[in-house]
Picture: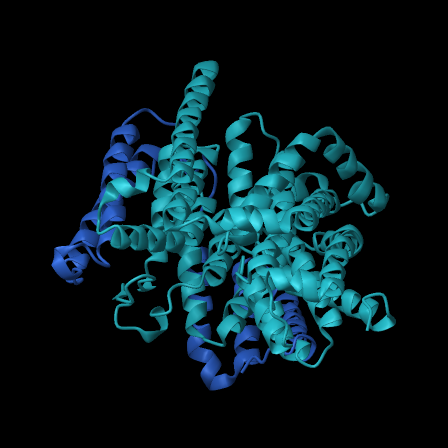
Length: 488
Length: 145
């Protein structure tokens, strides 16, 4: 069966549609979409099943931005990296323009990621294979450092938000030693705080609380959304922006590619690192620049996460871990032999990435953006009431566990208090995403070197990453001093 | 509350959290040969939080812009507190009356607290519950039981 048979095309279209629904609904993730698709994939030909998974994951990662634009609820952890900026653009210039930037940025990033996948899968996988726990530890430190200085507000408050996120990540069973921590006798907390539930509370429910807190909210009226010339808003204006900021898109895409092929990192970390880097490098950053950086890097990372999966049989993220399971289910062994024995399958995967990013993503993106624009015409307090119900159902549906709704409500109240105190929320999610990676790789490195901490500074790539961290701190402090002097 | 007071209150709470973390992790076991175990990472976070709290307290003493209340914006703690209470009642209600009715009730009371007129709130709650239930259970095959 060929990818370009009617069944193949239908699988791509349905996969894209299914992915866009999952990405747009808070609480449902690309990973969950793929997980629910795996039993179906079992009955399909691999030439159909695997491209469908690519379409699902590529479109779902973009669709995570729909919730950000409409209701400030990121659909995926990757979208949380630029939720504030995308929501601001959607409120000011309409969701079609905002989602156009996100979709075309994602398409560009996805195309770069696919290009690298086609040209350098084996070579890059060989580099990734050299990374040990020491290098992963430094990658996490670099991401956290960039996150502190990426905030436009106080770096101290960003650091505190980050520490609170890292602390929340320690709830549950310790990732290295298996010791249960901070579960307060509740079996529900043993598995840790699910960061999708936490994110729904932090961004979605806190927005409802913030609005209800302000008696005379300036956001009572819905913004005027232009539904004329939508093609121009969605395609032409963002394309112009991408042409003007092509260096930004290229830089963020390559950063996404780099992060994506590191096993265990994936699109979420890619988006965070790219947006943090962009915010740090340019203090006169516009929200459009941040959205472009985040969206291009996350889709680049989706493609590059397949590099270690195809070349070495190592999962780049949870989606590719499930893909490897599908490979094994079908009796296909991923690794160097795949390129010799099943070249047709490899090429059909490459083609699917191109089709998913260049055709499916803009088409479904445009449809989703039009729907988002219609949603924004609803009065804001009515929209917020619906958001309350979506937050409840989204948190509950993830594990059918009513207690997740308590966690979501608690996180919303916590975020509301943080917002009142001027503490940024994005850094809390960053801490929750990078916390387990940081702790696990620190403990593994420390234990295997018998607590000889000098070993963290011995490997050349680790040293390079440490130097990058120090440079990031230096640049961050210098930029803040410069902007303070300018303001004075 | 002024922004200075907010920062000082936050600093005090964070310092308490930092010290509390050290105290709670006292009961965590060490690795063989006395090497630090699962307590290490939370303690490192606690110590950094304590240091950040001190820094926040010091910077909090500097003159600041006025808070929302001081600027004359009308704010009220009642509605957000009630909305949290309404949403928190969902896990209690759902096992007794079912997920869909519990979502519907949450949405109605949430809408009323957000100053949506009661008729509109009722219609909205029924509509949103129907759409969400259909979307999750029928279209996506995710049971909401």
